[in-house]
Length: 234
Ligand SMILES: [Zn+2]
Image 1 (tube, rainbow, N blue to C red):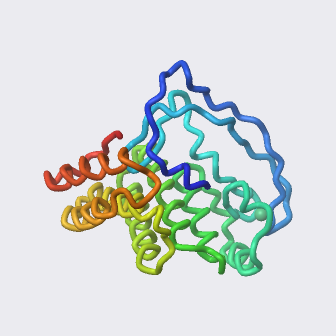
Image 2 (cartoon, protein in one colour):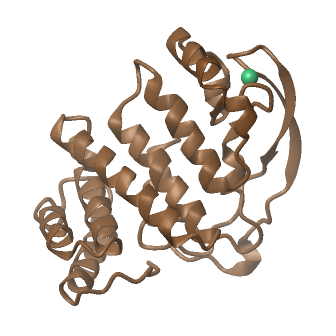
């Protein structure tokens, strides 16, 4: 996924948006070598975002389909995760017997991708945070609040580790600090939310996201001070 996925986006008129269109994609699993057919979607328009950067789509939701899961062994990843896989991941997937538990929902698919990626020696905590955040996005669309909270907790832990261990570059500091603060707010952990959102405010102007993110930081800090944990839109 690109860092551009995380930027606040402006609202687009409905007429400018393109509905998701599925087309078949043949993949070969890098774990068990099985071939299978999955689906990919054409780029869709964005009709706003929630405050954790979840895009809102005017027609259909492609997010659950951005993770592909092998129906034989259960390996799950985004498209580029099917190019090659570390031997340690292959051994782990086969030892877990994941093929017998093929996930159906979008949240479960993103959690499967996070589980597989977390085994890779080359994984970084910030990329795991993004996978868990997307699982939370899908859980919200599924109406499963407890699952959403679990995914948000996992995302926060991963992003906190990324910040503490230096995986977040200067350009992205404000965005990740904001996202952690916003996730703490959604979890009802308001003192922690305020600390992180205040830190995000202190690095305003350093990163690449500009005034739009700084205004969002200020607004969500006020929401945290008012002890509001509602899902909100940008
Ligand atoms: Zn497989």
